[in-house]
Image (cartoon, rainbow, N blue to C red; front, side, top):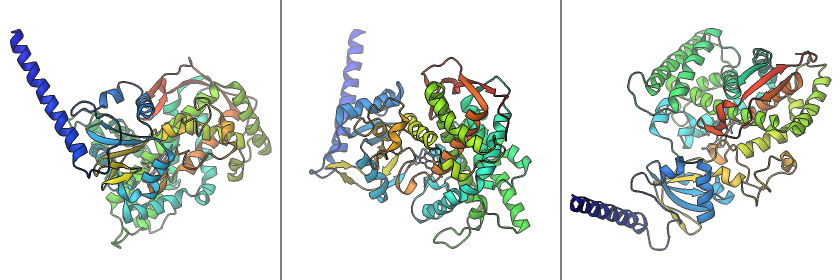
Amino acid sequence: MEIGYGIIYTILVLIFATYFFKRKHKEEGQFNGKLRLPPGSMGFPYVGETLQLYSQDPNVFFTNKQKRYGEIFKTHVLGCPCVMLASPEAARFVLVTQSNLFKPTYPRSKERMIGPSALFFNQGEYHMGIRKLVQSCLAPEALRAIVPEIERIVVSMLESLGHGQVINTFHTMKKLSFDVGILTIFGGKLEARYKVELKKNYFIVDKGYNSFPTNIPGTHYNKAIKARKRLSELLSEIMNKRRKNGKVEKDLLGYLMESKDNGKGSKLSDEQISDNIIGVLFAAQDTTASVLTWILKYLGEDSKLLEAVKVEQMDIYATNECGSQPLTWAQTRAMTLTNKVVLETLRMASIISFTFREAVADVEYKGFLIPKGWKVMPLFRNIHYNPDFFAEPHKFEPSRFSSAPKPNTFLPFGSGVHACPGNELAKLEILILLHHLVTKYRFEIVGPNNEIEYSPFPIPKEGLPMHVWRNELNHGA
Ligand code: HEM
């Protein structure tokens, strides 16, 4: 029996050794002799280092690798060979100066769920055309006009909370960012019944998006695929109604319906429009909700800072006659301290720790080879936590934003051709929420705790349960 195990063991060792030798040879030998692959390790056959990545906080994995190998290193995760890059220059190289050598890449199941025509899956002329439309709806001139509408959404969300109620902060913020997303897309003219239906189906898709992609009846994924189909039908219905009315609305849906598919000159199909609408909703919702949750955690844990933010906001509140006048765009621009708190939250929380691209050709970077087909990951969080760029990076210190960060070191919204077009909207939404929350409410985190969950963005454990009370004395808008 023992001899039998010994033979099996020897055969297995030989198979693994041959596999490793062949793979190493293939990965390093197929390229010209001058360039070498970055340092790093590729882990076990097939699984690579995926288990090491996900058996701990992924950021610990990235940080340890950077300490060991430096700013550029190779690894093998989620079935793909990858090069990870942890310096501002490298992030700029991939996302800005040589972005034509790297294409966006997402798992097929995610692409299918959102819709393959959504702008972030694409590149080239089609991407640029859609991007311009999205940018024009989210540019400061457009946002200035919707400040009162965002304010109305924020006020009504806060008023819906019971006095002294314990809320799941993340879920509450998700509802807020969904409503603001709907406002941006449909310009506040969406019939209530459509909003209800869109919300219902969107949240089913949202649940399935991060589930295991098995399309078997009853699974979250399967339900999400069905809800995604229903979303397309609803959006087509809304578009047909608009076509019948004959009026061109000045909102994202209106722009997309009027646009021509670049190069081809034909109008975008309903399917292309739906993919982009759902894409924008997705890009806008969990991101903004996570940052809002983190900001309330940081403020909730620092009473002095919260008091200082409150003083800044109470000044505006008083100017606006105890909130009976609406907030203005100019006032949101002048919230100096609160704005620094937002920026520091974006850095500390780094909710998008990295992004993915794929090399479309063999690329040389600083004498290293990034082979065609390999995934390339600029590590935003590592840059945000590098003490050379942000002193005492683990300290929450809004005053560090009194001067501008060094170029390419602050990348919460990415950079280059795919940089976030919603960054001003996200910041505006956060400022408006903070204004109303700190001037008219008190809040307290329930059982403060430093554990983090991934959903998939990092959020405080259990969505940060929080008590919220309305201040009876400060009546206003
Ligand atoms: C605090 C909240 C947000 C954060 C941290 C954030 C972050 C990002 C980042 C890092 C990217 C670039 C990803 C890459 O290069 O692979 C991105 C892209 C994008 N974001 Fe945001 N985002 C936020 C809110 C929003 C909002 C509110 C919207 C829209 C209303 C939005 C729409 C988009 C879109 C459409 C893209 C894809 C752009 C393209 O591919 O050209 N985001 N976002």
